[in-house]
Length: 86
Image (tube, rainbow, N blue to C red; front, side, top):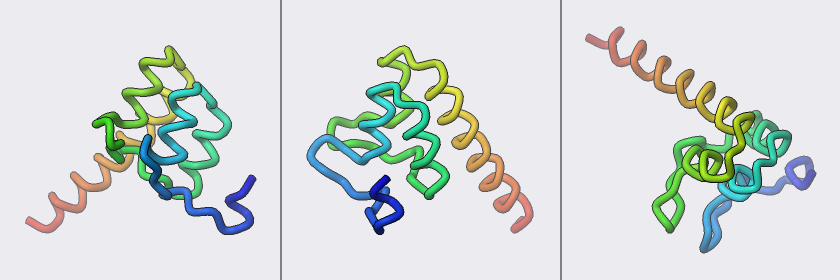
């Protein structure tokens, strides 16, 4: 993949990021690689869609599961760190 050559997993085009494209296409393996390389699972495209919304539209249960796991993990981390501050 181009990631090994330094491609930016967060690069944005007029339709979104590589994670948007992989999610919309139901490309579980690509979604997984992008997430492992710190693609933002909560990024909103210029069309106001998240990768999760696109995976749901594509009926890709595998991509939906991956995105939910990562999003939940990030939310949990944020909640715990916010909680520990107070």
